[in-house]
Image (cartoon, rainbow, N blue to C red; front, side, top):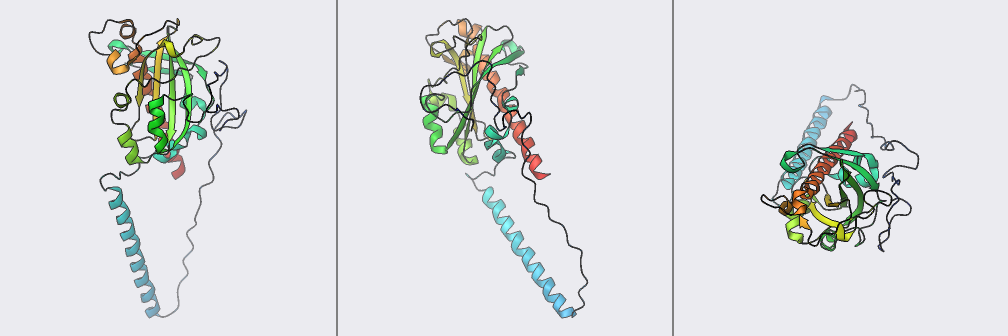
Length: 298
């Protein structure tokens, strides 16, 4: 946890130039190395000069031991395959710790490219303009319905950042909510999450002296909330106009993206922005978590 992380009180906007180093000591440019992997060395065999009978007994014990181990492993595999008890996907455990193990640029890259993320499959490019310190799960950083949903699962930490598009006409606050949910709970959590939460619009993160300076609750236009089944994380995004105009009725991204919509939110592609950047961050998290898992096996 970073010093000066927000408490459960009112959110304090971080300065536009602030760049936290999630998982790093101040001034460090890279993630600290993992603890050394335990190394075992195969011992050099020594010829046994005792009786053949004793050797036979040892061999029998070895066979019995391997049988017991094999049976135990089979039990674990069967238990993991039971309905409602899915085995953890690769990188699942590592993803849970990314909020303090990964550098901020790995979680929230300075620039995001979203091929096909805009209306008509147009390419979108987003630039990071604000990053907040990691925060405890509270109403200051999470919408009410989402907070109530993830707290029973063990809400670990919330990371947030705000991006703008290439034209600086829209702004988007994205959030990563890390939980202690097991694989079964995460799978259930992710099923139609945005629809289940209703009008549960994520809070905006403004940035003084940036194009997001006027991005507040009244400026929120469209949003999306997703919980991928293979990561113990909830990803949120809320978009709005950079010129500070208010929106009376924010729309979930799927509604704003519906065909035939002619309102300003739909025509500006703010629904596409919210859903596109959410999906992009999911892919980045998955790649980072998988890489962390591979590092542990080396």
